[in-house]
Image (spheres, rainbow, N blue to C red):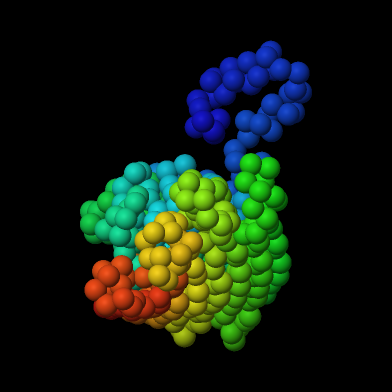
Length: 398
């Protein structure tokens, strides 16, 4: 507990206890017990917009449990993906390492052990559309949530996480909580990040390929629009290879045939290449009026390897067995525009509209239709389908 919330006599007792039980100085103890903003952290005093309709409310004053995660804190995790970054920082935020099928390609998260479709995701306080990929198996079967990976980390100023049900304020899609991503509005500074990482070779699994090499470039810069306007742009590129946590399949050894290698690669991470773009702009059009527009766009190609199929599944086509792969070619975009202003001194109104869409072509390669093969002696090896979801927001008055 922060000492700021303790009565004065309890704070004094805590200082004395710290001095008696350790060798730190009085100055160090006072620094330890100082308010967060005095120690260089200001999250508790950050003004929030999630879980309240009042302007000027800080995280400490909020009646709802709201965590504020700054861009600096998110960067310190070393993660290049928003999903992985939040999983390192927010205890109530859970992301499984693997899900299954296309669920491995569009990872979903949950808050307070509820489904991903019960967590409301906002961008600058406006609803974000869901992904077109429906989890068909494993952890979140039947659920369709927001794909947080399509939001560039470089574009984020802070994240407000409301860790409580907020259906009364936001609707039934906020039963688990709310994640509100606030985009940068800086019009002067910029940043360039270049990252590279990979796993080393394993002594247990002597697979020398698929080390999960991760290459990442992120660019962010702000520009001024007129005297008081701003335009903040972000661009990210991530290229990640497969990881391989598999072992020798016992069925291959039992069949006494040549092995295609370490084949149970479904246990590894998928490979993907992801481009994301984000922008946030606003300009004053009067003393009390501001026109704003923001959005994101993303393009992803991803491939996940599946379970090994035995050599006797389709011997005419795959005499040594086969490992199918499932992939997606996905396009995601969202755009919000609106105008806001003041009235009656403390009043505030906001008129906005949002349009977002996610489109994905699903591709299965190196596979077979066993029933068709049995009936006709032939089968395709490549299968495709298309999925899409579109979400639009009607103008709202707050």
